[in-house]
Length: 583
Image (cartoon, rainbow, N blue to C red; front, side, top):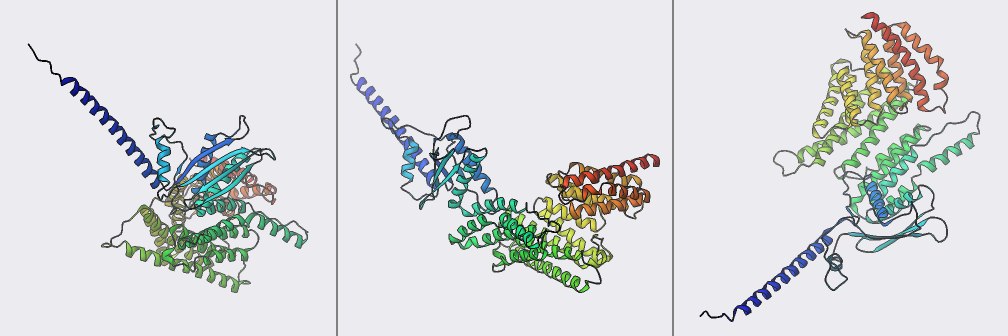
């Protein structure tokens, strides 16, 4: 008879008890691990956290919601940060849309996320938090938004309002994002406001009315300049950057003010050349107290732009002067332009030499993508200055403004050096549209028209919204068609004129008009003269017929481009007939 194992039920119960305790222990360990992970993530996260959004505004189709507020704030913060320099590290934003692992703690209203945040708050952390509330405005139509920004040291509060009019809600969200960035990183706030005010400054236009009171006219001009180009908000933001007292900010303050002065110079160029040059000097002066090795790449680009635009502006001012009546003034300004470009060339040469030594074989230096971009920018700017120096030195050959071609071996070597620098820049980093345009211009001066067209076409592909490459390509094709080179046919003239017509058709509003279109017309007349004097006379007669559409100062660029296109298309039809006959 078999014996009954009386211990079996006990052992079974113990096994189940151990299993249950093990499961509870594993669950507790899992919760601890999850909480530890949350705490670690909260302490490590160095970005911006949108902790809570409360909306108690009016209901309706266009009313703000919690989701919309969060998304709009995130959009504007991203937009503000995209205006910053390449070297600035954007702040990540946690807008609460992620879905973390979250566990409700049994018998409690707490969950793992809330517990983790409470624990994390006891430790040092780098995150910066936002709390936003949107409520109805009790005094007038619209809503009022309040934001509390905690940067880990203190809490700053700001209020933004919407008046209920179309677009005002977007302005309110922009205001909230800007107030946030003013606290978290005023550099980004300053760069965004600068971008907005730069656009306003570019709208400055001034045309003196005939027989108007001079004092009243000057007063109106000053009012427009101060209203559009005062940059009051930018200067206030820059002051906030200075006040936080970080030595590393100094080059960036120079960067911001350098861009400010360049924008003012562009506006003043329309009314006062001497004042324009002074703004260039002020932009350059912002960097004089800095060690050149400490100037970041983006700031260096602004510094070099000031040098180059200053030298170019001084040089262009000479083109309007008559020789020999203004001989002394012309010589003085040419020397001044050359000195400015020489100074910039020395800075770039020294900087390139120091960077070569750092990157020399045997040195322990990890090269980054940013290093490549900086080296490419230096090579590009150095090549551009070499080209501009050649232009200044050969000014006597083209006093009327027409840019000539290289003559003699020495000039060809100088321009070839510029081309080599552009080629070097394209190998150091992906080429920009600006590099390709300058490269094409140097090739054009060497008479290498086909290669110049290729560079302009590549530039147009990279920057489809910029009409400059298309315009330069049209001019080069015209110059090629009129060059006294063997093998130029009526078909070459016809293709060039068709490119001009295409440019006037597709390049937006026809900008840039001014001197560049004048150069285009000169090149077009030259090409038509090669096709036959009657073709040029027909074109000139057409332009006289529509001169009234091009001359009024209040005519838009598109009106002027449309008037010119009528005459270009007539010339194209004329040449098309000749192509048929020649075949």
